[in-house]
Length: 553
Image 1 (cartoon, rainbow, N blue to C red):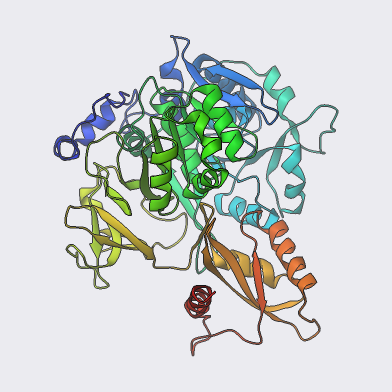
Image 2 (image 1 turned 60 degrees about the vertical axis):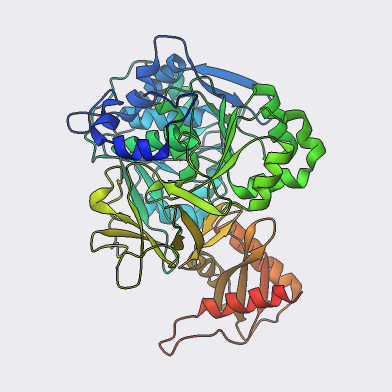
């Protein structure tokens, strides 16, 4: 694939000349006759000893891998998977930190025509169990730090474990390192069709458990277009997307996107801090950075003095996951001399509306930007009619006129968001007179905290598992650092009394059962919850009361 020129073309020109045939021609394979994601993201970039991965370990050691290295590693993984009985169309789940083996597992899964499912390493057994049952995964690849969580998963698939030195292999597991070392570095890629899957993602549901999002191979076209037009990635860029590949933005655009364009990606195993971020930018010479507003607000909290050593180093910064605060834009301009642009998307569609680095158009603070070429984005009223400028409605994708769109519905579940020729995002927006989109708010109850989308149903279900809890309702409440935090309203069973100790116990219970980012940071004990006559909890009343209370403090 080609990348963005130094002088970006005008947005209107890119819209006018867009042809899906041109996007297909950027691939080595063809969605109609044969395609393999490992070829597209690795093999076709070999032969020139080009760098593919910069991996920094938790203790700061840098290792570099070429596309030839990744090809051989993915082939070994492919042979390990085939020996374990994995075939084309089977799902392989990966629960690994940001280490080189993660990339080898992803590419090796794709190499044999199988489907990769990410499992975020902060997930607890409950979250893991539901996702594995949704996908019907054939194998889970993990390391010893995460292996114990799988002991609590009922009917867990077979496990391949990456052992640390001197650790014993759990009974029945595959010794990943030993099998990898013994495997051949040659594995013929399996060609599939564009509608065949290569990822299985999950949503954060609002009225039920997370739903599976099947990602077909033809989504590669959209991922590549985003990297080219929105990220504006260039051949000479040193790119780092700090998002974890356990989530869509990381897997789509920290792994798949840059490798698809033949440009090296960066993995950092350590924890995110302002100083560690500046260290890596300075050490590697990062020119293109991507992440969430929450992460970028932590850079602000680090202060101008910490940022001074990398001021002027970053060519572009891309932000996604939640609306970008104008304050962040101003701060990045003043203290990092870097343009930071807001991008909008979903797990179901990838990125769709962007302030493009790779295309020239007006960028207005507070706007999510313009529809990416290949998508027609509209605003709908409740009756499904398209609205004009300055009329709030639901952001939707015009299916017939969006050739890059790839989502056709949830995995083995109904998809009411698709009807009448549109996909409705569920987010309330407003079309501006210049054609850009302004984000207003979520039309559902999804909580966005630190860039993660959290479904209240999951948290409520975990709370109700505790013997002290009779009922629970969970909402997002405003927070200056995390955008929102999870707050729970709990009705206790008669045998338990409210206390700070019990609140902490419930929070830790959810953290262990669900994930490290989805636990309630605040808990109120109440005698009853507001409900509709039919018995449905009215979360919006709780959320509204919390917003008003915070305005008064």
